[in-house]
Amino acid sequence: MTDQEKKYERSHLAALGILCAVTLFYGLWRLPLIGPDEPRYAEIARSMVRSGDWITPRLAGIEWFEKPALTYWLSAIGYRVIGDSEFAARVGIALFAALGVVMLYFAGARLRSARFGYLSGSVLASSGIWLAFGRVATFDLPLAVSIELALLAFLLWDAAAEGWRRKLLWGIFWFGLGLGVLAKGLVGVLLPLMIIGLYLLLTGGLRAILRPPGLNLAGLNLAGLLIGVAIFLATAAVWYGPMLARHGRGFVDEFFIAHHFQRYLTDRYRHPQPGWFFAAIAVAGTFPWSFVLLARLGGLWSRRGQLLVHRFEIFVWLWAAVPVIFFSFSGSKLPGYIMPVFPALAMLVALQLDEWWENASPSRREVVAVTLTAVAIFLVGVFLALRGPREMGIEIFTSFRLGGTAILVAIVWMMVWFLLNLRAATRFLPFGFAFVVVALVNLLTPVLAERESLRALGELATRQARPGERLVFFINSNHRLNYYATDLPLRDDKAYFVTAMSPEQIVPLIEANGGESILVASQRQWASVVRSSPLLRVEDLGEQRGAVKCSPRCDLLLLRARRNEEGERRYATR
Image (tube, one colour):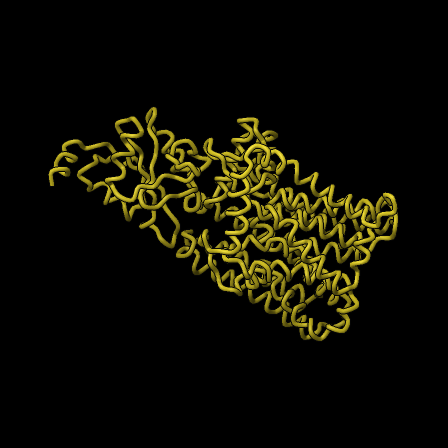
């Protein structure tokens, strides 16, 4: 590497480091755990640290076999190093997301050019869905980075000359597959092998895989393949081995049967979506680069002859397409399922930007993509400014500040492209989008903390609870209460919250709890049913507002219910 190349690499890495620091880490400590999943996973990781058992996941002391260990371990390490906090739960995931950006840079630089590597990394670091999932403690981002590690290692192996480096890449590929299985189960190995299998069929490279670099054990040409499989199994066995030894058939039934096959083949977990759902998520998730991606897709047919001889782009398109197609047939559909496609989509955007980079004058496709990008960002800003109070519950002045930030970025993007060139505009947009992220964190965090987290209610319930007093949900349960009041709610043998569907069901729960009262968490729309029941004497303790679209109906009220013995007698004689 020449001195000039080293200088470029340092400047690229510094720019990507600043970008990741803003988009992935800025304000990570300010937002409470949100949604139904993040508090649950953070609590399981915390229980691992407290119990010293880093193998069996437990929620409130009850075994929880839904997901494998990698995300739990990342959060648990955060607790060990930093202490018990939301930032500690998330920082390992954010580091994984930043690692995905850096890996894409180095792989792109070696496969094509330093410029392509930087474009790929900066697009990924500023893609909306990557930074969104990189800032929460869930399983989708670690899976995406694990698969990225495996597929980039395979690409580099495929392009490398014989030697120790090629053997190392072969080992890293299999390690990445094992890490993917630790991240989210069988999909961590299935998706990469499907992508690679199709690639080998299209490029005639199957023979190379059956004769990989490795030790010549008694002349067996499959020795390298067997060594790779051994690396994969050894990596996965770090957690799956002890789990199978400890829990046997119970683990297999819950983890593999229920949460792999039934989740894919049925709608048991109630996440139905139309068949085009993941294609739309793939395009929208790359925002603000969506129209550049569509430009690349739009030119695919006209470049079909060239594509057949460009092994790299064939691989990247397969990487982008296979998970989308595979999960489109799933009975359960959530946006995070296709997180593994976004490193590939970032490279496709980078290919298009790299192609336009050298143009003396902008092509029609470039003009359309740049203009539509500016229009899209501008419209997002207008939406935030005008609809922020209604859709997100923010004050009108705050919504104008937030929308104005996006509108400013759109105007500057268009001006830089028009007055200078695409190169300058491409350098600007990731940092312009990072500026929007800073505004979102500063202005939306208080609203999200109030509307999408139950930290306030959990802390209130913990303060109000009397010795031995537990909590039951009425009509609707809410898993956001995990982490903030984990041991307070009554649970069934699967660790799900006990939910009473009528006041009559609350009375035996008070008796079973062995106390005089029980805490009841109820949405406002149902609270009057509890209050008006002749079986109970009810005291209001506090409340927390719900999501904007359903508040005040879905505001969560905290009540204390006692048995009303006189009311019970009258009720019994009716």
